[in-house]
Structure formats: C-alpha cells, structure tokens
Length: 143
Image (cartoon, rainbow, N blue to C red; front, side, top):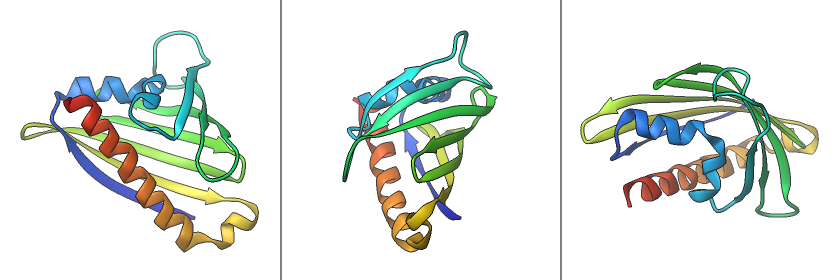
C-alpha cells in the first residue's frame, strides 16, 4: 500500500469549501485531468453517494467509480475509489483556519498487477498529482 497525504488552505469559508469538494461533479472545473464526473445515485450527497468519473493523463482515459463511505458535513469525507489497476481508500478533512479552510487529504493506494511493484514511483506521482489538483481547487475557489 502507498500513502499520499498533504494539506492546503483555501481562503473561503469552511462550509463553502466542503460543499464544493463534496460534489465531485465540480472536480473537472479545477482538475484538468478529470474530463467528466457524474453523480450516479439519487438523493442528496452523503454516505453511499457514488460518482462515475473519467481521468486522462499518460495513456488512455481511465474510468473510475467514487463512493462516499463516511460523510460528516462540513468536516470529513471518506471514500472508496475503484479504477483499473488500483483501489484507493481516501479521507478528506476540513477545518476552519485563519483566513479560510484547511483541507487535508490522505489516500491509501492499493495498486494491482504490475503497478504494485512501482510503489515509490506511484507515491511520487500521487503526491505531485494531488498537490496539482488541490492547488487548482484553491485557485478556482479564490478567484
């Protein structure tokens, strides 16, 4: 298993950041690698909500399913992400901070197949990609 973690402060109110991030269909607005994110369950966003997303990057587009397994507005979202070659167990934590919201992420990546032998590379790529995604969120929400 590979762990990717980090944090960022977004200069917007706690509830606003939480709600925007919790609606995964917003992610293509700040993550240029995500080309589509559709909510595939009915009802309000919460435990059991699922999204189907498509990511691009090196190689062909990758489809993934995201399911919220914990949802404590406006503080915590846990999710399971399934894609070809990897499962991800994720946690997003939100707290009020001076000037905005501190958001932390912790992803435990479980690569399958040949990817599981590339742990250090997967971690470096994951760290870089997550920093880019959440910096994109910060730029988008603060503009």
